[in-house]
Length: 96
Image (cartoon, rainbow, N blue to C red; front, side, top):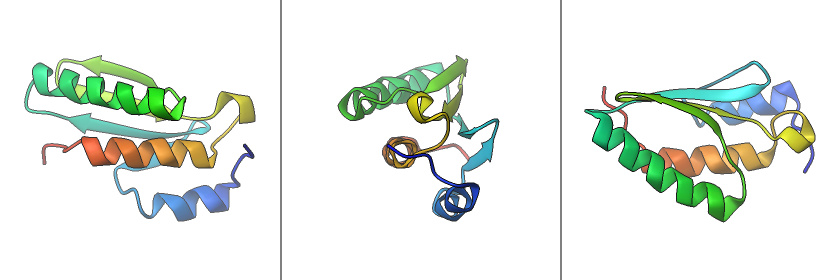
């Protein structure tokens, strides 16, 4: 899979307002009501990751999930990262 240009990344990010491009990855942070809800979302995301055979760098501290996506084989962002971001968006309902 080929690496996207910065211009392509910025254009695709217009559809993903919760995500930002920095450190050669697309990144998002989601806050939930509590740890249980956060962990539940992580579990559902894990199934999507396996289905897409694409796995995030992520951390969880209590009710906050931080996700960073990049395609290591391409040394940057690919279409695969945006496919996973879309799947994550369909699962996650951030607290406003």
